[in-house]
Image 1 (cartoon, rainbow, N blue to C red):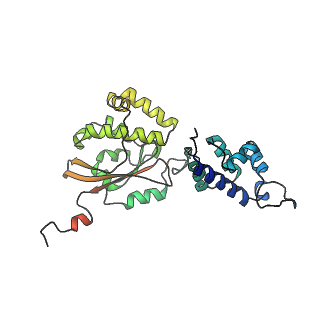
Image 2: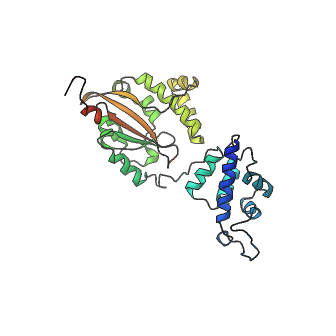
Image 3: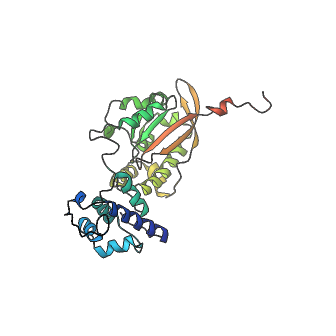
Length: 285
């Protein structure tokens, strides 16, 4: 977890935040003896430094806004010592410009079942086809309209999240998709370029292993990956050839979930849906 160089404002904000968390925490809350000699509220810097296993002088530099960078290991130790909530820990790492390590238990339960609230979100977006990607781009949940649009998903229904398909593998390995997706070749390259940007923002050993496997197994992936191009997760129009319903056109949106870093909500909105479909055409009434 490498740390980037911090500017003056970031240094000050980081120091102020850490100091505010230290001053709100009592000695009793962390198991330290309470004495009458304390002149200021909260813990002393030396006490936090001992709890976190860092030098008191280093903590002083950070709180005074004089630290050019702070490593993820130090941030994690301080977050634990200061009893930070998940939201506060995330804020601390963002202030320091360091990627927060993903919590392997969030938002999937230990048995691989996707969090109920996320399932309700995906299911509730019907009739728009919608699916959910985890940080490694495994398709861990989808609603009925999505399964109707891509029937191949039905073979994975009922399986735990850990056994569900990876989006990149589906595109590269499923024989039906090139005929289903009109711009399949372009979409494969677009996905790879987007995944490179995603992997940079959310690095992990699992993502590194996936890239190595796909590069070895699929020349199309390896060639697109070696281009080192990146593309944003911008909305774009998709045309799908459906065997039962003919050609369907959608705006596809890949939306990050702020409370679940690295996860993406992918929504297909039919072109012409909503207010655009109700607006009168030029010259109409």
